[in-house]
Length: 167
Length: 147
Image (cartoon, rainbow over the protein chains, first blue to last red):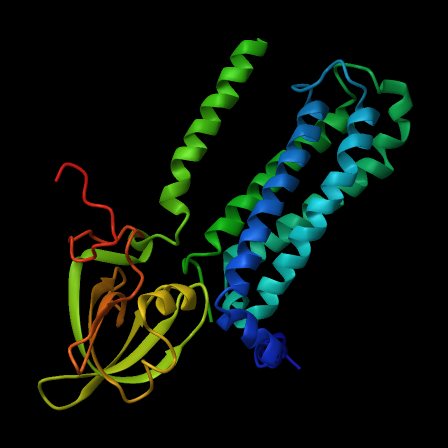
């Protein structure tokens, strides 16, 4: 089965149709998606600014991580669920959108970047926790994260338009 | 240094906030041409009641007796419902006249400003406030500044 026929199959589900044709459900999903995305992006940006050395230089990185992490995960959860439902409601609309697939790729890269940081550089956090200027690995993780998430927000917004849409 | 950074971030914040109203709607100007008004008269062939924009397909009768297929963008199903247009009022076969603006790529697509039914009832289609030309016909729309 090709990806397109799989998308067509999902597109015909009554629950998928109900989402895209809903009077209040769709606006509620879209609003929740945007609000949770703002919360998530805001918290991610604050962590990244600490990593690159622009914010909270006097606060240990592990302290910021400990405080922001639960909120980041909560916001990511809401954003992921609402985003998945929006996609589920219109798979064929997104199928040919270059901006949408670029966004997906950027999100995967941002995820890989965060995991790579936590399993390599962050393991030795005790050695540089309170430093103002962090190791290169941490700075790079911050810069990549800022760039990738900015790209996600931008391509997410551009997905609303019909530009670069193929069939 | 700190003060400069703060001012720079505040400046960016103001710019972003100012840009939001322009892009908050999937803007009229992104796809439609305000200088290409079209008046489409024909029978509804299909209606896609989908978010974020509903699409009305109609077979426009041409002078030579043939028809031409057009698709007209409206607001969200929610917007249309509040404007008085729903599944019962707009069914396949309904004779309508749509006042709108053609797409910039000159395909048979348009943004619908208002729709007129056979009985003369005229309803707005949800383009108000999206950047479509404000011609003053829609009383719920804020007036054009300076007028």
